[in-house]
Length: 114
Image (cartoon, rainbow, N blue to C red; front, side, top):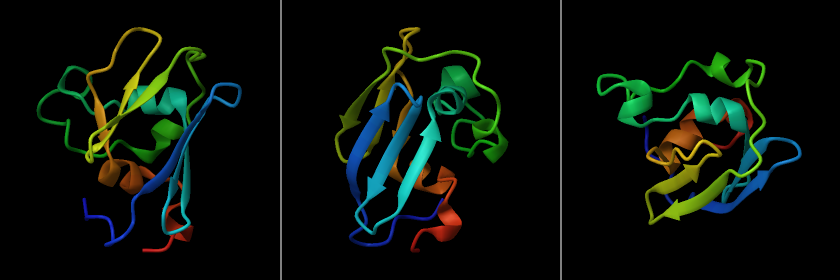
């Protein structure tokens, strides 16, 4: 995972429960929109991924799979300067998505400034 370019930071984080998406607006103009169900499947914690795979990026196909569940009570909490912790309807909240991880998983990465 490469670090974010200097000066690129999350400017806005928005959960759209109707659209079932989380959008990250970066300071360099890039907007990354993720399906909530894909993010739940991609949780980076050791319980979800195992200790060996928790630092690996998920297969991008995970964001194209049909949703298994509708997330009505998902909440986002900024985890210091590191990233964001999502709390899901099922109570799970041990995975922190670092800013670098979210940017690396961005489905529009090819169109975002680097």
